[in-house]
Image 1: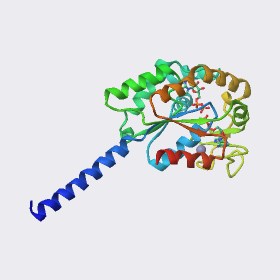
Image 2 (image 1 turned 90 degrees about the vertical axis):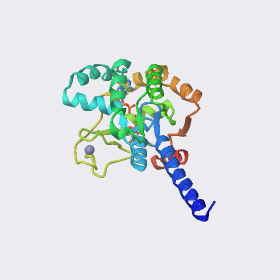
Image 3 (image 1 turned 60 degrees about the vertical axis):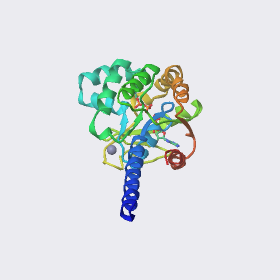
Image 4 (image 1 turned 180 degrees about the horizontal axis):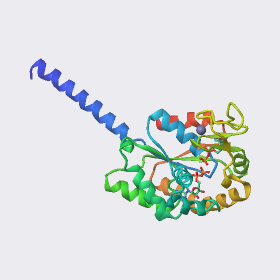
Length: 241
Ligand code: ADP
Ligand code: ADP
Ligand code: ZN
């Protein structure tokens, strides 16, 4: 083999390695956030989306946007959400699969609030398997029930852009006003204590089993969600690399 052949082999090997690693990395960024309502899934998902330049997909945000626009989907979802119940799987799964089929999801995404039931997780798994694909990480943000009701009653959400704050832990610069877009901040109807208790019960019955589901898939990662927002995020970035 001539020197130039050796060199060209080296270059192409390095080239293929770079492409391969890049592809591998791209495919490694399909993330599911698990955790009770109010655990901080949305807060962390937004930070992950920004750092890794992947879309943040929240089924709750999609439903709320539809409610605001008065679409038929919004009307149907509202009747469940107001009572703290889950929107039926059939409806939710369709919305989610349509969303992840969009072009911006090719390099991955972070799912916040989906799946919330074992059937939802199975549908997602099967849909990905058909494309030789899978979820890479399921991150469980762990916060005990005792902390949840207090967290939710302090949560404030922007009516326009969906940004979330907390009156004590994550306050906006100006009380009642969104830092990002200047709109009004509200306490969501379903964040009132009586609805939160209902949502927590449904979480334990229907969503918590997903921790075992993803543990069996070998991709479950646990983080303590009771510490500072930035410390939770630091622990997540240690996992994601
Ligand atoms: P939180 O962030 O507090 O957990 P979300 O914004 O994720 O709340 O969800 C608000 C409501 O939207 C839920 O209580 C439920 O009614 C509905 N919802 C959101 N995602 C799903 C889902 N994957 N399956 C069924 N219902 C959902
Ligand atoms: P989820 O999406 O799991 O329902 P959010 O991200 O909306 O939860 O967080 C719920 C509330 O708790 C919000 O008011 C948020 O600002 C606040 N919060 C989020 N993470 C933390 C944290 N680590 N410590 C204290 N408060 C937090
Ligand atoms: Zn806003």
